[in-house]
Length: 217
Image 1: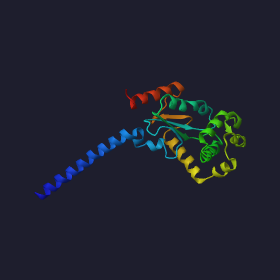
Image 2 (image 1 turned 90 degrees about the vertical axis):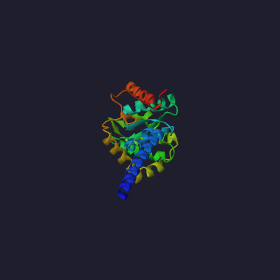
Image 3 (image 1 turned 180 degrees about the horizontal axis):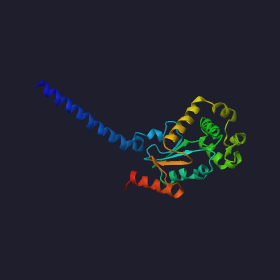
Image 4 (image 1 turned 90 degrees about the horizontal axis):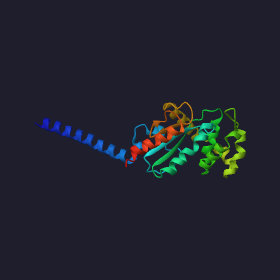
């Protein structure tokens, strides 16, 4: 009799655990949205540069190379999406420095972030990309004279860019890009869904589709 009671109690405890776990996960998913997904960290790391509301349910992730012409051409779309759908979209920038020499530019961007000049520096480098790239390669000596335009302490940038912590960021982003099948830039994902086929119109459609799912009227 005692054995039967014990087994019944154990079964009840296991059932209660699974029910509680289900409601916990459901509540977490409701609160965190895409970030509750098991593989969300592959798309968004704690250190990733972001723009937009912390409460947003739609994550627009861009794997980018600062020396990539198409990345520069598509750079306005992230901010335009934030402006068009305030509070609903979070833009996340990841690195995929595939062009020769572009890893150094990523390091400069991360060093600029330590001076709170990340987005200004990125915009400047995109705007003047033709000045510091040649035949799809980075000419790093042409980057340095541009940096004072956004108020950067260039000597501090030179020192900070070689920090091992920045090396870890670059390595992790490249590992995540490979894991997600990013072979060229820019690589876009919206709540984990890849942009296929690539293009401006498909990107807008993918964003709108996920907005309808996350914010049904």
